[in-house]
Image (tube, rainbow, N blue to C red):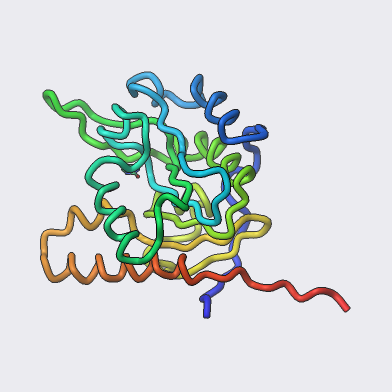
Amino acid sequence: MNIAASVGPALALEVADAESIAELRHQAEGCTRCDLYRNATQIVFGEGPGKVEIVLVGEQPGDQEDLSGRPFVGPAGRLLDRCLDEAGLDRQRCYVTNAVKHFKFTPRGKRRLHSKPNAGEIKRCAWWLGAELNIIKPKLVVALGASALYALLGPKVKLKPERGHILYPANRPPVLVTIHPSYLLRIRDEAEQRRQRRDFVSDLHKAVEFQPLKVDSQP
Ligand code: URA
């Protein structure tokens, strides 16, 4: 049984208008809606097959994603792939995207350190995320971490109390709330890491089992 909660409208009420993901991606290539495009190599748009039921939303591309132009191909992506596998969720049957489409980083010598997107950047980029969801119309969206959750459900919904729950925003697809896989990579304590990983896989498994709520027809 789903744990359902009613939440307010999603953050982005105005979104890009396009007929297809290909058209949307083309529009997004010239995106200057915030300053992040200035230092990024390229936009990293969502990817997946044309017809999917599940959309996975991360935070923003990392170093390897920025260079390759594809979401979740670096260390966090490889861990995500293993956890999806264990949960029985086939990545090839999901659309994978991010709340923010350009890599935000701080240069440190030769390295580029991930820098968290701020609320303004997330709101600006929800222009694209909202449009991706309008085109795909998934049965479920998985919010991987706090930035994705913010983009999808706004500032009032917090990750910790809602983790593992499925929330039902008005006029939007349901959102399954879970952690970001990079959180697992940062946990130093082995037992805690194992526990969090197991819970993450179990959250992802809820996406496999998810059945949309039936709306009773009016008599
Ligand atoms: N982290 C994310 O949130 N998205 C990616 O694409 C890669 C790492």
